[in-house]
Image (cartoon, rainbow over all chains, first blue to last red; front, top):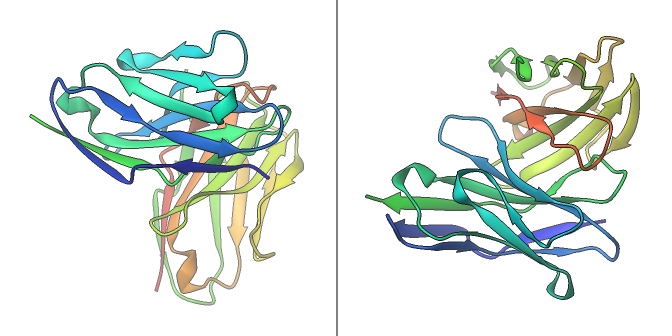
Length: 113
Length: 113
């Protein structure tokens, strides 16, 4: 079974600061990797995903993530955050041909104006 | 196109009662997954249905059950409610591949008193 760990529980940043959220997974085989975001009062939505190809993936709203297979990591980055990036961020994985998503505990990001 | 819809949005029940939650997937999506979200346990997978068949099940007691209809709409049922069942129940729909994005609904907030 897959497991996902997100290193930071709560991150507080000022606007224009850079953001990096860590995500590590444990699974012996190939995985599909996802980052979801949950803005206050809204439902989960996909930021980006990786399943093959270029390990640097670009998503919506200026986010990107890098898959490093040797480190079992899929860290999320944004060079310059805005107040509107305040949200909870979830890393998730599934195995090929398996729809079950295993989520990390989530990281709450607070951006101060 | 319309997103995933879930009804009802809020429910209050007492211990011992049973409850049925409904999910209408995005048109054309045949896979529906259910997740439980709590502050303590995070997002946990309940089960996934595809073409009226349960393909995967998480580690929840048998009190949690579900089904899917021929139009891909899905219901989940929780019998003999316990206080610990209080949670946000999320439904997600997706296409035919595990790399397809799972689109989440707004959830049903269940409170058990």
